[in-house]
Length: 583
Image (cartoon, rainbow, N blue to C red; front, top):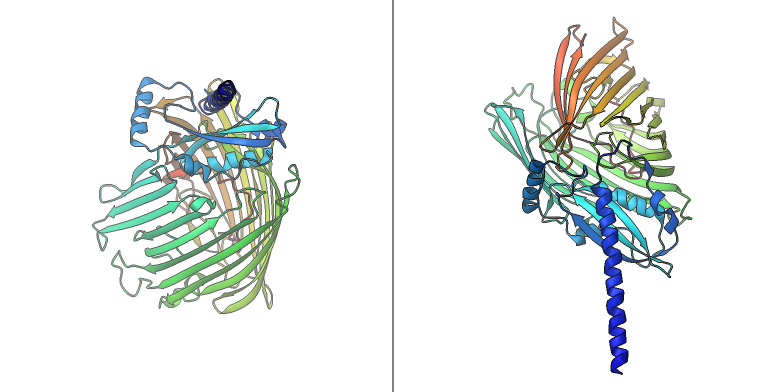
């Protein structure tokens, strides 16, 4: 009897030792993938590629490991950067295992779906507090089972910035995207401005990622700095709350969201009552969607998605000035919309788009949707309909492109406020020149309005030509073009990497009522992007743009700073039904 007990204990210890050994090897492999050094070849890989050979096997155990800042994605860093990393580790609370598991939609005792594993890796990388994630699969000899090791690498969750006009009106921001390692975010902003009444303004925001493991993101905020959802052009105070569950994978069944905010204009600049627009409004937005085909065969990524949305923008007080009383932004707007979408989407993993070596997930597939509904804006009660076609393609060479075609219209006395918009963007592969990487991109977009009633006229703003704002033109047609070339360098200063770039912009407005029917504008930019992948605030872009002729016929030079620049969040591209926005 004693011999049997000893044999069982020995066998159990041997199994435990084997299990620990397998887990340790998997974790070491994950650490190597995350902290790999730069290579001449840029990562180009399908999200599911490394998991295909394990398809259908049973998931036995899932181990979670979070790495510290000493594991650089660039490999071995300079001693001073390593020292900074060790200090950051002492200040930072690593993401808790429970928090990582709240972001997993793969479970033990399920059959392994390689596409679902790829989706989960991407979903983890999409979190603001996670820099990199890898899932390592280890097969168990003599069985049809596998163990999974989920390895993640945090971003230093503390951040801050100084902006505004220094020294007269500085704006200070302090935030933490991962309080206590629980996926909680908190931000505090404070503005000091001697020309403002009151002289001090604040803003507070709280977020929780995957609230209670539901994959729904919770947000609550209060602002005195016009930093909330804003409809009007005055400085606005606001308070709001929202809960949003995106469709994180084609294998998810439900998505939805709810949000409410109250905004009111505040005369902080002490403008005369005859000029200041005094208003207050509430916004309520609810939507829910169901994903048909979530249980299809593993390789079949085609889906149908049906979503319903109700929104209500209600003005408690409207401005009194006659010149704005007919603008849609200062009038009640409500409606109910239904959208049906057919889509198929995969992802490629690549680098050097906006990041400096981190993995960036590029969608590849199509999305065809139609939206129908009923809206009430400025007393106009009208049916609404639109058709959206979106096609994204990523190739194994590393290049990728996107094409969009959108058409929308209201129906009352025939077609009203119709808009047609089409365009596309192309990114070349990232070419390697020694330790340097070059990626080019080009984009073009065409917009046309028909039978305008309540829609705003077409404009040119900073998103088309930096530093230019053309709004006093009754334009019904617009075409815009942009080209950019970026050079990713190995240059580094205390962990910050540098990528200089040059850009060219061109746009044309067509105005039937103007003396000069066609108005053309250009911009030429030089700048650089700076990023430390270990830090929360993403890429900082410094850009100077020369505009030969502005809307007043004069040449000008504009300087801009943008922060948190990154490639678009790569959720499955179906969401709440929306009215087409073209401005």
